[in-house]
Length: 567
Image 1 (cartoon, rainbow, N blue to C red):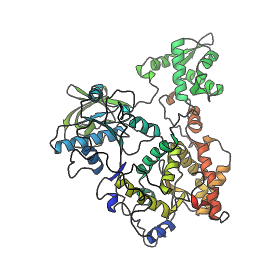
Image 2: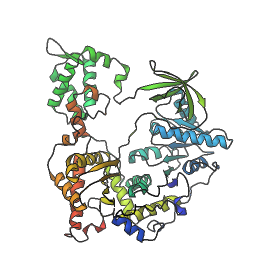
Image 3: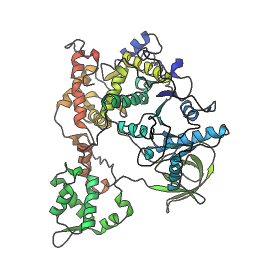
Image 4: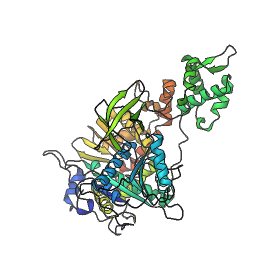
């Protein structure tokens, strides 16, 4: 695992240890005064084991102006068959564009292909066929589409740019290598921009590097792999299964339909009352019709839905435009730009010459250059255990044998900031003036519940302003109360019994799933509050801060000095 700054000197050269600047007259928080009092430099906690040496030397040389992380990949893929995994289709396009440009600058044959879900079948199949050839020395830039299920033959190594979202994803990607008797080989490339001189504490921490270490350590130490969440209220899926059952079985009584559908395992938390609410709504909007005998059948409006070939997929779809260049189909994009703008797809840049909104088609021609791509939102869900292990990575005094020299140095710097800021013993850190940052160390769904809890349950009492989350790592905000009052207020509110629906904003209908638009608003809100937000996990974390409050009050001495309770 190696770390790279995208520009400038690397961490082991003394770079990347920013000193926060504060306006004159502005109060410096305690952690900043402590940090300035210490000698700047690389922390020593990660130095007790030498950095890992490269498994293989470079087989090529990247252009001088190359992005350091991508140049590293370029130099270690020539003469080998590799996969280069990214976490989004946009990043996949960008990486492939840069690597192909490096080939062109070096006057080398192109040796990078691309594979993701928005490419046309011909592009995806070309990449798959090339990877099946054991004699091929091409590399493929890919997303999760090549994690599993597709035969790619003998693969020498896989690269992962930044940390994946899950341990299971990490294992799937690493498992693509090491077949046919060879050991698995995964090279992590963690990239980061240099922080600005005036950057605040949370912005100078290498979150992807810490997350990558946490993923690896969770599996090494505990064989931890995320289990599927079975506690949701999947009303969108319930709509799909209800309509599918009526379409295939014909007329059914409400009782027969409930017996057929609600006994399926995904719906074990859905009550008869909620199912009745759904059926009445579907009758009202003509997706279901009631017969003279009291039975239920698919309504006229519903028939147009279930008879579409798109009905069978239960996942949300973006409105997509087919992209064509002469007779070649390149793939699909969302939100096509106006004529004359450029788009990125299939690892290349194209000039838009015509957009047919009626047929949902974009016609273009190939040009040179590099631009970002956009295929629609692609969020990742991170488990609370990963965030908890990230906290431990920052606070423990051990090294990891798979870290290379830049990563070792960058981890040392991060640990120094972690210790000096007080993050080891407190979740709330003062950034100066009325600005604070909260580190909940919670996964995506509990973190989302924390945001809403602070705004809706505590906001008025805390006099919160400008709450800004960087999910799921930290939340910055200003408040008019003291640190002690913050803990007292959030503990009092978390100790109260409240309906998770209280964390849904007034008038909000949080539509996420494909068929939520056909579900009654009250069920959409309930499904989000009770099935998406991890309110119990959030409340448990807040209540654990009682020990922090007691330590601040002097009632438990140095109880919190060893770390946060529950972490």
